Image 1 (cartoon, helix red, strand yellow):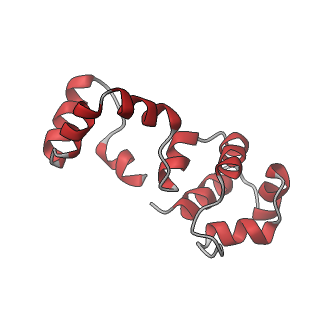
Image 2 (tube, one colour):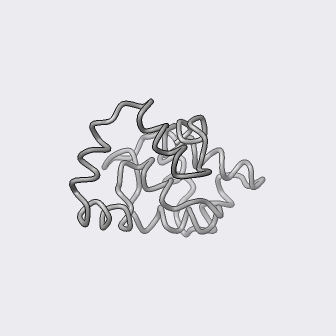
Length: 117
């Protein structure tokens, strides 16, 4: 899923129009429209500070939004740096192996929910 599409999905689920969300996070509605439609001059996603405000306003998972914006959440980055050997191994696994590992770890998001990211 694309970052802007997820933002649109979240604010519509809250019953908010684009202008209402823009006011809540302190940005112009045209800027937010560009974010949703992947038409920013400096890339497809806004700065981390705007992502944080979006997550807060939309009661959304900030890590999900960061990942959709192709950024690594700080907690994940820290863990990767603590255990690079483990993450190199995970990166080399195919989807079936990763799904098996996730199932063994316990209840988590389903593959379809992860695919929506």
